[in-house]
Length: 113
Ligand code: HEC
Ligand code: HEC
Ligand code: HEC
Image 1 (cartoon, rainbow, N blue to C red):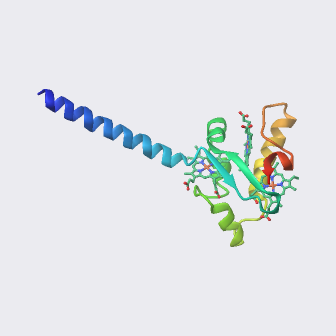
Image 2 (image 1 turned 180 degrees about the vertical axis):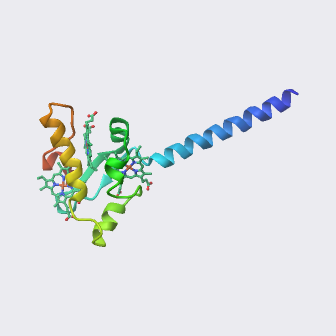
Image 3 (image 1 turned 120 degrees about the vertical axis):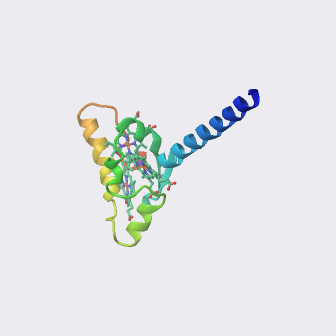
């Protein structure tokens, strides 16, 4: 009897670990470095945005949930250069205008070399 309980506990622990791992994979990385061309890299806090904005579609209606996809689609001519950037910057600018907490709006605060 006791051993059955132990086995059940182990099974439960393994299952919940798997569910948690799946959750992490599905949400993608916490931080992402994006290619900003000649202007330099962008350090993008992904999880911060997921938690603050709630809606994945704000970004992922423009590009799929896949690392490196922005660069790839741009190279293939399927996504306009700066299209994603204008979405990022546009939201930050709107929030600043409303006097709310926002991310960077100046080139150098987003791009770093
Ligand atoms: C503010 C914009 C933004 C929001 C909101 C956002 N993401 Fe992302 N996400 C990105 C960017 C940028 C990338 C990286 C794309 C690239 O590298 O080209 C990305 C990549 C991903 C990836 C790919 C991970 C991999 O390993 O390939 C997953 C999964 C993902 N996001 C899930 C989500 C989910 C789920 C939500 C909503 C809870 C969400 N994202 C909300 C911008 C966002
Ligand atoms: C909120 C962050 C943010 C700000 C502010 C920002 N950028 Fe960007 N920029 C990005 C991101 C993300 C990309 C890559 C995705 C894209 O091309 O849309 C990018 C891409 C670029 C590119 C490369 C386009 C290409 O593929 O050739 C250039 C050049 C650029 N930005 C210039 C600027 C200039 C100039 C400013 C200031 C007027 C600026 N950026 C402000 C986030 C930002
Ligand atoms: C719909 C609105 C919205 C969009 C789209 C958005 N952001 Fe933000 N961003 C925010 C808000 C709100 C904050 C402030 C959150 C905080 O500091 O708690 C922020 C903060 C940031 C910060 C600063 C984080 C810190 O720790 O100081 C960076 C960098 C940033 N965003 C980059 C980006 C990039 C790059 C994109 C596009 C891929 C993007 N954001 C798209 C709303 C947005």
